[in-house]
Image (cartoon, rainbow, N blue to C red; front, side, top):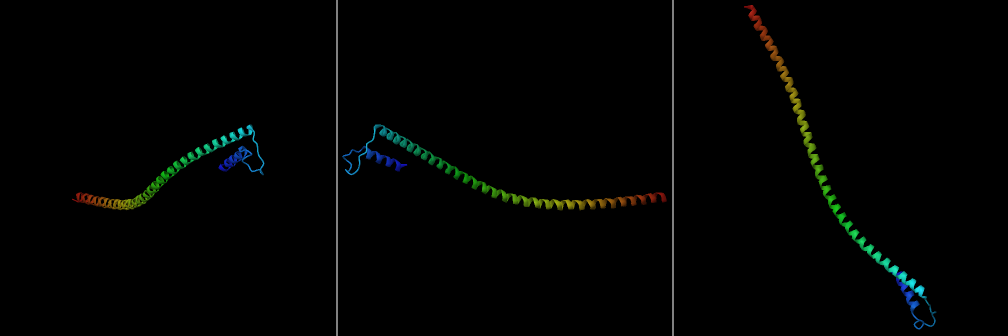
Length: 145
């Protein structure tokens, strides 16, 4: 972009300079008022385009800086979330271990309860049998007198 602008300026200088400043071997160029006006318009347009590009570049730099800051913030958030995930996994493993231990204890307690229930039924049956035998013995003693 700058090369084109410099080339255009050099052309303008060669065109504007008079025949006295040129070497005699080189031909002299003439430019019309319309061509000069057109060159001025082109130069102004190039200057405007250059200014717009510089503003766009500055804006892009600001956007890039803002994007980098956001990226750093997101990376920090990601690191924090990864740390929390590791902590939650550890807690989950611990909770699973405790749950398995509790289930084992519950199964043992349930098994003990069933054994106790069977023992209690057996004892109840023995007591009923003793009661019935005792009742029968009392009945037999009452009627034998």
